Structures are given as structure tokens and as C-alpha cells.
Amino acid sequence: KYVPDGYTMNAPASDRPVRVYADGVFDLFHLGHMKQLEQAKKAFPNTVLVVGLPSDIETHKRKGLTVLTADQRAESLRHCRWVDEVIEDAPWIVTPEFLEKNKIDYVAHDDLPYVTGDNPDIYEPIKKKGQFLATQRTEGVSTSDIITKIIRDYDKYLMRNFARGATRQELNVSWLKKNELELKKSFGEWLDAFQ
Image (cartoon, rainbow, N blue to C red; front, top):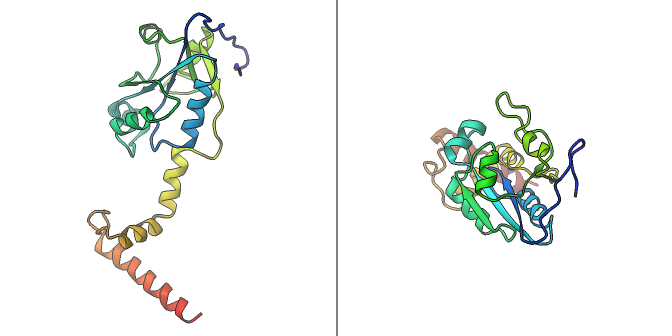
């Protein structure tokens, strides 16, 4: 197991399942999330993976809007083969009291410092107690990357949805924007006809 420099990791219990906690927003549940949860689940031979999901109010206050609601994100997690339990309305910052109440042995997260407010690393106390289980990020796969791709290819996704029968009102698109896209489409078809 990978342990961040300067920290130790407590020995796992051998007489019972090891309870590992992984928290996150898990918006647009994707491969990067699944791989992180798989690492946490497979960290020990007998692991119960508990996943914490902060509320929409807490998430929107600290990270901004999500695409999916907390209920939708929780349901996505429940359908992941690696997840045994989901705790909704989980705290943004994991406390010793929370770990004790939920009988958590380790907290799994990538080892980069997670800054919030004036706190340089919300996982620092857990690392010091030997309860931190470092997981590796999946490079090139993140919710932000997915949203960036959608925004970058906005016109293409609008045209795809118009072709499927969506109205401009459903897509919150102005009359002018819809006509601009129709004109581009007609011009593209006209050019294709002459090639």
C-alpha cells in the first residue's frame, strides 16, 4: 500500500472486515471514480467500502453547482460493484467523531493536500493518526474534463439534441442561436453537395 511521505499507516484488523471510507462529490460518476473506489475496496482482503456523499447544499457552497442531484449521485454509487454502504449528507471534513460513530478504520483518498478555506489539508489529522489510505488518481478523467468537453462542443451537442426532437425551450436556447445553428447546418450541407 502506498503511504504518503512522512506518515505511517496503522496495521489493519485481522479478526473482522476492515471498514474503509471514501468521500467525494461523485458528480457524473465516471471511470476515475470507479477506479478510486476499486482501489479502496481491494486495499485489504476483507474490506467493507463505505462511501460518503455531502449534501447538495454543502457541495454547492464549497465547489459550485453539480450536474446531478445528491439523490442521483447516491443512487449511482449504490450501483457500483465496489460500494457496500453509502452515507448521504456526509460531512465535508471528516472528524474523529464521524470515524468512530461509523466504525471507520481508514479514509481512502488521493494523497494530494485537499485545501478548503484556511485549512491546507483536510486529511492531515487522519494521516497523522495512521488512518489514511492513499489511492491513485486516474489521469485525464475527471468531472471537470467531461464538463469542459461538453462546453467546448456545445454547438455539436445542441444540433444532436435538435435532431433527436428536442425543442429550443427544452435546451434553453434562444431563437437566434437555433437559427444560427440551422444556417450553419444548411451551409455545411450545401458545401458537401459541391464536393
